[in-house]
Length: 450
Length: 154
Ligand SMILES: Cc1cc2nc3c(=O)[nH]c(=O)nc-3n(C[C@H](O)[C@H](O)[C@H](O)COP(=O)(O)O)c2cc1C
Ligand code: SF4
Ligand code: FES
Image: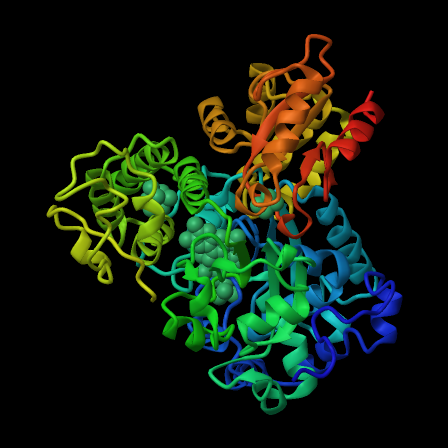
């Protein structure tokens, strides 16, 4: 399907600028500087590139939101907070191809008329920050960065901004507050960053992998790029696979690749040849899928939407038939509770409630009424918060209840009063519509193959 | 006090932003590197260097998990227990460290050598289970590997 890897080519020593240049590196910056800025944006727009940070937003379109005429400074923030559980891909770019990221940042800055770029990297990645800083120093040394780049008259600076441990700082408005030296609370939108971002100035936020795709688009041309993978979500994508597989890792693949192919062919199949019980396709925020439901599903926005989930960060977590999914969900709920910034009541209280109720299931102290309550709490969070962390906390819970009701039924107290018998035995009926279960009528359960 | 090199670095960094406040995280990092944790003295010093009120610096320190607000051991061990690591038995790793060092999570050994904590996903899910000690990532752990690592950390 795919030719050669474009984001992470297996070139030894590519982290050094000499090797990068020997392989044509910074040639696309030269090419861009010879184009008009809006031609560069247009190229990215036509390529079909969509953001790799989680929301799959069209990158070129996002760039056009930046005002052309303004007396204000313009900013680009590159998001390398990478803290979504199951995600470890941007780190590969920092380690194996930091110059591609820097070149992409410079091209993006030129296209949007940005004079200052901040590269936000999570605090734990200090070793990787050192690698990127070294690459950045090299780029400055060769005149690719700073004042009048390559004599073009265009100037931009790139500064690494180290985070200090907070998942929420990956949310774009929180990230801007964190850069400004505030606590990392998300901001209410609108206004959107392109109008009112860093210090009230026009700002674009893009993911690290998104920006690394930009030189590739210029090299191949938008047309060839748009033919890689799925037409509506094209390009190479860094797919991380973790959990119960023989060869976990990050694989650069064309979008549109089958999830089953990713697991079998690239990640070496399931450990111990077991069956797959469940797959979280794109980081802990994305809706969980039943093992048998991944058949025919592809890794792209369209394919995963049709399957009832989303691409997220393309960090797949594979779980075998023996996995205790209640325990998995309890851990995920604990994460969101820990990371909620506490600004909105539904998120602050709801994530705590969900974690508490799930712990009751984990220890066998829950009743079927708890399942209704759990879903009610999740439904109450979704759509009622300032930022998407609330939704991200609700989705795993909603999808787990909907798709794995039997996992909960197994865990309720055997003495729990249930219409017509013990909880396990009375598991019947359908829970296909997650919202329907939100009603307080007695929940009845059966495996829903969705 | 912060070292002269660090103060010079803070002055350099200030030029990268339209105002001094954004340098707060970097300055706090420098303080923690020198002193191991962010004391009241550290907050006062960072506030002074950046011309910020102390309560603001305090608010920032308390927002982020990586700033130690109390003294910690020479080596802070952070074991990731999030899903991908959990699926590959991070609980066994955590238990093993607890018994070997005879400490609970959040505690420091009496000799001040180690502090043990549980961490959220550290971006090492493909090489799980894993732990971070200082800046170093230790990946694909098993009990024997952990033993070797612990004895190498003096
Ligand atoms: C709670 C939360 C955490 C996020 N964490 C990250 C992150 O670590 N990295 C990232 O690129 N985007 C993250 N995002 C998405 C960003 O808000 C933003 O959409 C993204 O950086 C835009 O880049 P893109 O258009 O290139 O995808 C997060 C969103 C939320 C709600
Ligand atoms: S949804 Fe949660 S994390 Fe986001 S702003 Fe509200 S409380 Fe904070
Ligand atoms: S879940 Fe442990 S490093 Fe990601």
